[in-house]
Length: 130
Image: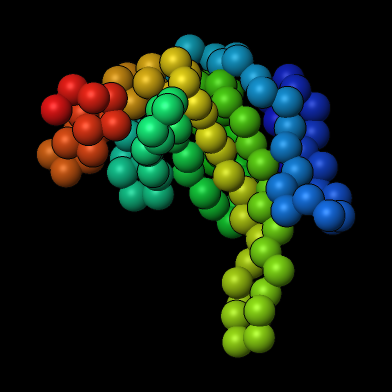
């Protein structure tokens, strides 16, 4: 899978459970429609949290849409390898797009008005607004 202007993600198995690409800055400017779509995607698949710094992540088996997120909002993409335990052989490897710090705070504040009340409350709590 190609990653914007940052090269290719490498799917190399080894001792590490994750293979990361370089952190990229956004390479495109999101439109209002892009922001609304990203909010809906985050609403269904995303997570935010963190104690010392704000973190945002979205995980998918197919990493293609995460590349789009990275192009619009920056961040990292990692391939996460699962070591299936007996009985969990159907669990698959997946891709994770994530942001932290100011980038994560900027992302959640950009999509905030498109989020459900429940997600807005989660964002407020993580940002210390509540």
